[in-house]
Image 1 (cartoon, one colour):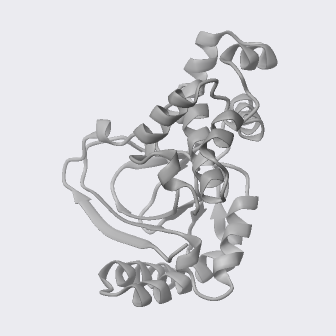
Image 2 (cartoon, rainbow, N blue to C red; image 1 turned 180 degrees about the vertical axis):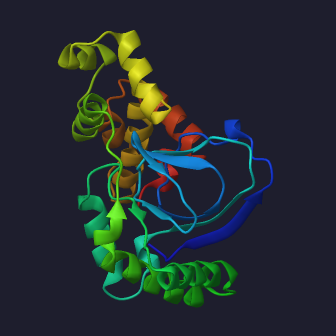
Image 3 (cartoon, one colour; image 1 turned 60 degrees about the vertical axis):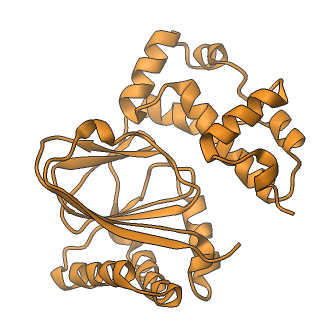
Length: 260
């Protein structure tokens, strides 16, 4: 896969809270929070944001910004794949990020003002760089700094029962056949299950399952599996339903995403 980096600075004087919704990416996302009044919710885990905080989410990790008041909101956001990193970091970052629990250890902070300013300067340089190689250089240095400061990464504890549910769903993502199955597993009604899950993640349980399955499907296709095989493994009884869902999510057909 070719190196890919997309970086931009966003500023909104009066942000509309309804525009910030739960979503996932096929790339890593690095968000540097500058100003605003908001939390970042990752897989049901809530992180209050302060100026200078860096949030790093791995591929397929669901997340959303939650605004508390209408005040100016500024952030830098960088999307990138592992191949964008230079040297050993193209292999080490996936190992570190994929091994961590969902929604935990996503925030990197520092009490050292000089260090925070150094991180921000790298973010600014990545955003302003005119060519890919310059972006790759500064991004690799920044990721190296983040990896060296994992001990300063903080997390907020989600509600235990929802935490267990999210963990179970992701561990059995391709095996779950119905919402009823989850209700029986966790001894809870559909209404209560969806209400509790949506309060934490911004999504119903089944929408969450479908979204995660489609991302898993994309990875299988890019690894060389056939669309028919992937459709079956992801629990679709009819290929046409898988095709429609996949194209709606990614804008291309499963066949177009399959590794040649």
